[in-house]
Image 1 (cartoon, one colour):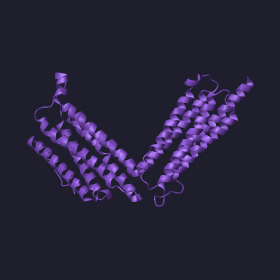
Image 2 (cartoon, helix red, strand yellow; image 1 turned 90 degrees about the horizontal axis):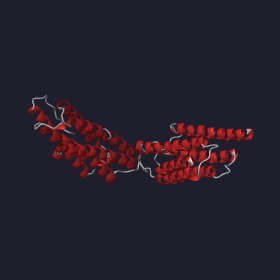
Image 3 (spheres, rainbow, N blue to C red; image 1 turned 90 degrees about the vertical axis):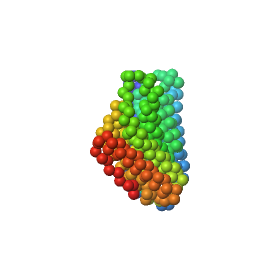
Image 4 (tube, rainbow, N blue to C red; image 1 turned 135 degrees about the vertical axis):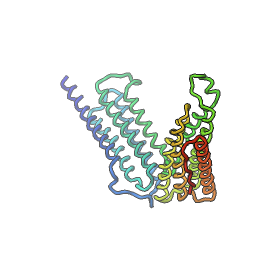
Length: 347
């Protein structure tokens, strides 16, 4: 009995050490790179190939641990320590790779990489905790908790393989997310605007008054303009965006920061339009959205992927659409006897 207790304590000690080491790895991801690397001369293709190999190595080591834990007799504590060290070395390799990634390669791609590696280490931590929790317990081969824990590790390693390979691609993915959110907001609003939808609910649903529609149409026009702006920005980045310098990578972060603000502003405007329509709130949210759209257009003017004739033309066209819709909103408010909203030209 005493011998069994001693063996169990050895396993627990091994697993506790592994847990602490993996927690340290999680902390090290947040550390500042001791020797920052830069885009110039960096081989991105080799980096991603090597990173995939490292993630496969980690997955292999976790699988080796899980299989040995499933097949009696379980390995000795010293063998588990040895296998655990291999898993830890795979984690260390991933940390080193992260800190070798150029500091000027862009915020979005680094954030995606950092988040993916953290999720891998967190899954490894849970994997080791499962080893501890199942120590001395019996399970059928197909229902052992370590299988599920390993499955999570494997899925997190797969995420690394599918990460965007540049800041351009990372920002395009996030801009696409914003585009989808904006489209959803418009669809929901137009569904409410649909008479059939209102009729389905009868008198229990608040409905717009006749003069509400005067402000709804140009407000929806502002939302549609936001959607077109985000779409055109994405298409232009895909077509003309370069990936040769830290400054170019930084420009994708710059426009992403501007675009990311639009979905919340469009949501605010859409909510103000739901019946019963809040005219005062509608006025304020249209003003804020207009200012933000003009800020995006102004920001775009100087970016390297916006210098073609086509890009300049659509930027000018969208600027005019913002002015047109907002002028109509101003006219409606004046007609209703409310305070005037000033309209400024987009630069």
